[in-house]
Length: 126
Image 1 (cartoon, rainbow, N blue to C red):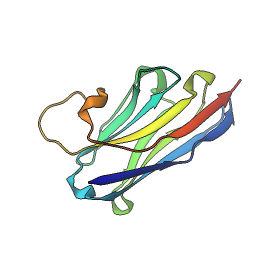
Image 2: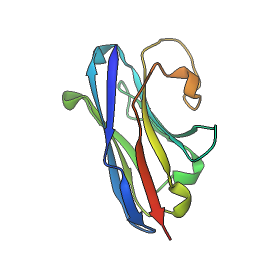
Image 3: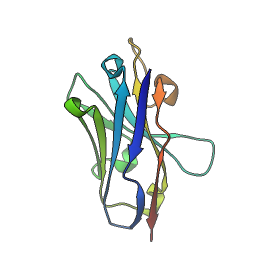
């Protein structure tokens, strides 16, 4: 099992910045990909960003490209999401996710991830 704990959310004005952290514990060696999703009020959980521990390539949803940066610290088993130039439409609960399975998958699909954190709320005021 892998436990994920997010932190760093809060209230920020439009144009501001926040850095979210996701601390992983347990069988972290079993994970090969990490991602951030977000969920505004409603049923859909939206992909935000993802990367593989084995590579340097990161992937982003178009709406955050150039404003958000996903990164990881393997030694600390922690993944970060640096968010800049925040907009009111970025308001959501942000969730960290980890994938342990192999094979091909769609990194933008929430069902591809095996472990989830409890979420941290980000609210951007206009």
